[in-house]
Image (cartoon, rainbow, N blue to C red; front, side):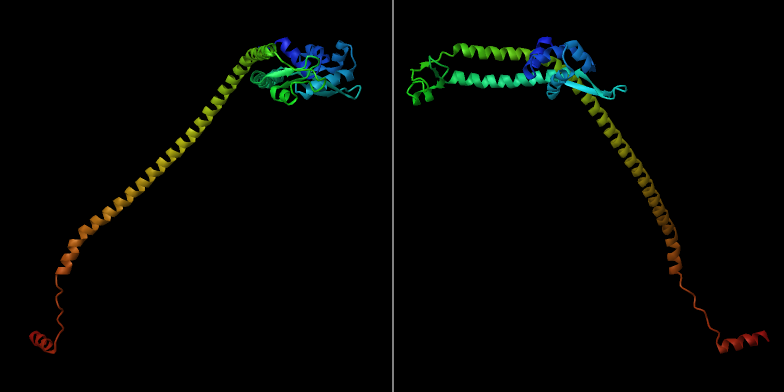
Length: 264
């Protein structure tokens, strides 16, 4: 949704001046418009065009690019009106103005004011009491100011500004919603990546656990086999231990002689 022309005109008139309204109307909705073409269309000098554009640029309402003219050797500037920045600025100024009006409304409704019938002197009840309800300029007796009309005007101005914001803000909200959707998608993707990494780590850990368990099982099996071997060989060892060793008889001198006589 494009901004209504009236909103743009009022904004440009407020921040730059009446001379900028025609220029903005000329470049609005276009891209990279030459400053020389603008000067030609508005029937003013290039310097005058630049002064207006610099004023708009100071509030970020226009952007520019520059290109060098190969024949003449100087730079030519091309300008574009930034409608998004204009919308943001209208919202900012309206919100500030509403805050100021609300403060003014509070003052007008919470205090009694007195005015001089001869001039614009106006003061609250405390100041009027200090001056004995006489004008410090002319000495005329002060009269109570009927500020009902003023209060109504302030309230109406607040309503008008809020109505303008209602027209502008829905467009902003739609864009914010789109941005939020994009951000959510980005966050989802990031979460998915993290989840994948965690999954890989857990799978890797599971594989490591399996390998460890296999190694442990092998070790256990080896230990069991060794125990079985020990169980098999233990009885044999016991039997061997139980059987006494037969003493080896050493040949005595008498026995040798006996053997020798038998052989004869």
